[in-house]
Image (cartoon, rainbow, N blue to C red; front, side, top):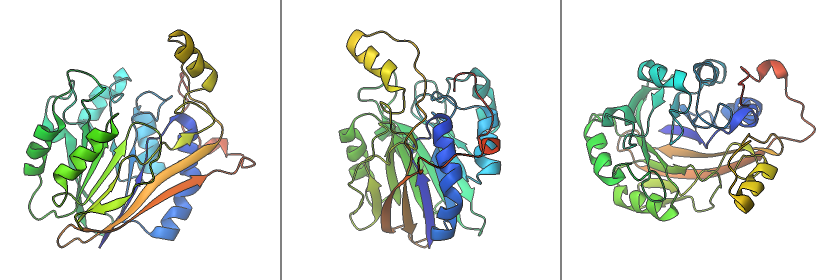
Amino acid sequence: MIRVLAIGDIMGKAGRQAIGHFLPSLRERFNPDAVLVNGENAAGGFGLTEKIYDQLINQFGVDCVTMGNHWSDKREFIRFAEQADRIVLPANMMNVNDPAKGVRIITTKSGKQLAVMNIIGKTFMHADNLSPFAHLEKMLNLIPQSVKVRVLDIHAEATSEKQGVAQHLAGRVSLIYGTHSHVPTADERILGGRTGFITDVGMTGPYDSVIGIRKEAAIKRLMTGEKKNFQPASRDRWLCAVVADMDEDDGRCVSIQRLRLEVPEHDVPDRSNDGPEEKDD
């Protein structure tokens, strides 16, 4: 059996603090073989930096980092992403030139192998993104037959597109979880008796906000259309995730559990564990 802990979109420093607060106890409670996170909002809410990637991998012990539409927001990260061996890019995004960048075979500390895939939606997103359906067939062909456990992060806006992809892949992928909308859904289930699925894991970050952004600026934009001063919020920190068990011999998902954990408001984080400061965080 392979157990995966998949954590939803990390939003800025508050999201990283939530992971730092809960991940040690989650390891004790669930003993996952692999921890996956979506890191496209981890640096100031927009993109990822090499220093924060290093924090996720080496301080928090994350096994793989999936991305999304903000993957290239930090210019420094574009070149680094080519070399990072735990990064998975959205394979069908208009600025990703190779489907192989959306697939990563990782070996767990216990010696087990699984494939991690990342795609992005087309509906209500960048018009030049390519079809996730066509790219998924190419990506599946890149995975050795010996690797039975296959996990997909679909980073998409439309719930219908996430569910359509999941139903299309039911029986061929072990676990499919949605990211991007920053709102957890309560529909975790197993499709066709083989594929674990949830429409959206939810954001790991500050919920006293509008999808992680300071609410005053977000409301002003909604009211006036003014686009400025978008910064991550910091209060009411949640960690949202799923834990799934998959049979390593045939890849089928046998259980999926949704998690939503709140950092106590009286908890004062150790600033030494905050990781590097970003000028926009």
